[in-house]
Length: 193
Image (cartoon, rainbow, N blue to C red; front, side, top):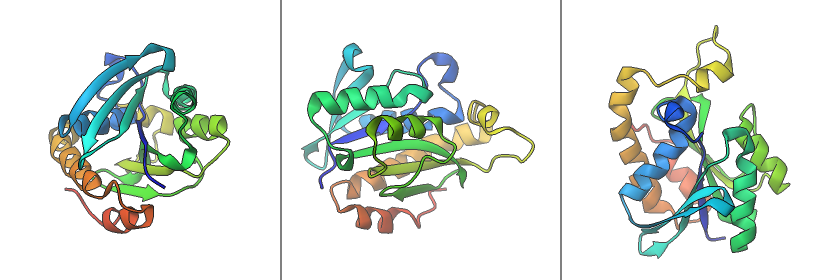
């Protein structure tokens, strides 16, 4: 099944821009930077919508403008409008169980503790979609998960992030049109530091 929609998760607003929860937005920003891109703001679809050309093919990319725990509303609005199936989407999100500088790709699975993923799975009624989980961990044991994901990245992480995101996006774009198993096999073992 061909990938038709990439969704980067985050919270809208400048006060969230540098938080760990917004690394999905940062991934999309980097993807757009590396591509020829048309920009559309779709207020009715609750998203900022982009159409980058990746390896010669145009693909739809969105940044939902709902808050994280309502991400499913934006995703379903875009999918319904453009007649996209769950198996044709990729969700790019933060993961506090994955170390900073790594990514994990899975073809399906549960939401864990991630409220954005819970919202998407609930609204789609399906877990069968590709997900790119970007590492923001490890979370300190004394800190609540909600507090940790809404923290700003520390200075050394912010300094390293542009290089990491550049490498992650470049690697992802090289294999984006491959079967999902090949994407996982190529990218999951890589450390991007």
